[in-house]
Image (cartoon, rainbow over all chains, first blue to last red; front, top):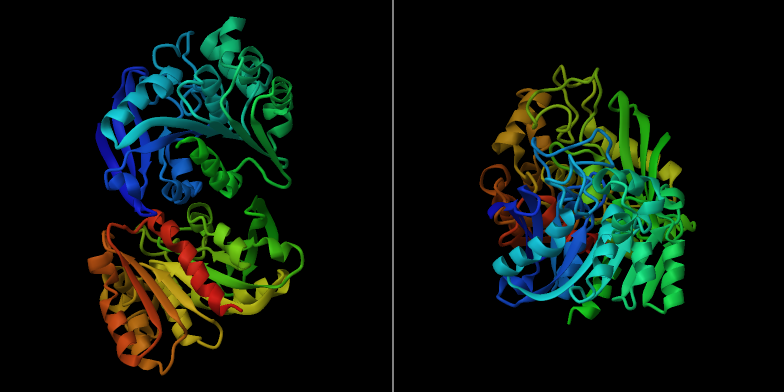
Length: 276
Length: 276
């Protein structure tokens, strides 16, 4: 693991690392924010953050202002990239497919399957690496934005024993039925409906018998809300099944990091309750 | 004035505008953050933020997390660009001269003098525009980072009747004696030592008989600290003259927005005391 950069921030340390990923068969970059308590040897819990389309590890790191709250609540933040990358990694001209758009699935169709194993990377490979190299304990929560909200929700719904809580800003909750998701699933997963359902949070929610606590925030001036996001069905199923879901709609807010930054403090406080 | 974009943020509104600047004789873009109170008709004070080398209005807007504190303290933020821009505006290949590096002076040497009038733009033109178009009162403070810290300090020292307080992160305080400043002053101001002194905060501080409250924060792991910044002489003069200067040195912090974001809350709280 190679340290790329290190910046002091809110009394803690924000670092970027490069390492070879066995899951993705390429070099990957991730960022970790260690709060002040971790720098003096305390083992802290971890919030995994999954970013949206076109992002790297840097968008959330520089724009969300999350380090302030991670420091306050003694939680480490781990911020993976959104896909495998490199000259030898398949790509597409569209911003919603290929590099920067891994959709947190294990691709089964070529030319994607040989590198696009982001589900395994986030769920299995990265946590082992983090727990080996950093002063963290084994308590984990997961959160994300847009495509990353999809990633966080489907991962949490399938792995309730691994995560304490899950939250999402403007998530793609029903990718089998919405355009960005359909494009990605068609390419990465082929036409097998079981594969699609296995990564669709709304379908997964129908199937599971219990769920960890969920928080979702949605801006009502988000251009992608009516077509790409459509959280209503997901909310309805959670209510019907009596799952704990805190859903907040915000008049006037859009899809940008101006929205995420406005409420990331509440999200980290939400997770901190369960990471104790 | 043309509205370029608008984003809801911390209950207020972050907007970017384009307008023709008489001072700079070109189109300029600035950003303004109106806190929630301003959106319901209250007239709020304004903190002007001057950014550093290579920045536009967007770096501080997206990376500092300042809107949170501006909302909390009912202060508007105004974020001008760092220079005139455009195809017809003189430029240089170096990142520390020309577009993105206006140094907040009125250039007197060609080819710069015809557009590079950032001092007049920030001190005279922009506040009139802001007070005409937005729900603000006439209470103003000024702050900045690096080259923008230089801008804020020299402007405040020359105009103590216009601003209530001034603060700076890692400012260039003695540009006549440090490399970035010398490059810029040589180009923009020619070889007249009086002109140079008129924009050098350390020289100005020697001359003035009173000063508004000043806060300066400096990271001790800032690569530019020993050569480009050197705040010690400025601090010493302020102490000798009995001016109010709060100076904070931060072990481990560098020159980046990870540093600015860590302490912008304290800076806005500092200004808010005087903007009442």
